[in-house]
Amino acid sequence: MKMRVLIACEFSGTVRDAFRRKGHEAWSCDLLPTEGSPEYNQYHYQGDAVEIAYGLQWDLMIAHPPCTYLSLAGANRMYVDMKKEKGVDQDRLSKLRNGEDFFNKLLNCKIKKIAVENPLPNYKFATNIRRHDQIIHPYYFGDSVQKRTCLWLKNLPHLKVTNLVDKGELYIKKNGKSNGSKWFMYMPHKDRAKNRSKTFQGIAEAMADQWTQETINPTIGVLE
Image (cartoon, rainbow, N blue to C red; front, side):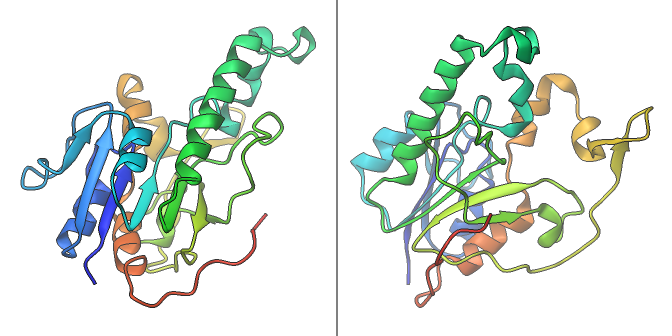
């Protein structure tokens, strides 16, 4: 069954193109212009994702809202000068609340099937976001990178592992502790945030394969 699919907050075209290759009417949208396959770049809305999600008819939406102020990775930045004893940075807290609002507008959109993707949130402060339904990594789907990715699902099943490979090399600091994947740490700093936001190909293919089946069992419950 051909589906109308919106990939919200995606400039790379990775997920959009995976659905297009499966024969679905997939569109991406982002404030940035698209950088996907030239043959599919015409299927991109440059504009506000919420307006496009609410203003047009879609069967499925996969959304990648900005995580800058929501992610647990920035937990220390929630405090003035990154020092807990100085109290909460109210400006950053306000930006986190705006991020929550955008996130929930996408998750609660009246589209039948929805998946929202983000890193693990800082639930201590992001109290208006419900718990995620699933955690995945690129190495579950053929890409040797460890990158914890949370999924919030509406009328969609958990993604099944398709090609379990090694986790890839970790970056080890001088103190002997790991500071994440080498894939992330060796990325040029000026492009790091932008490149890190791109969906890995294996995950995109799994979404296009598994979330467009005519008969699927929706997810039940929440995974901690």
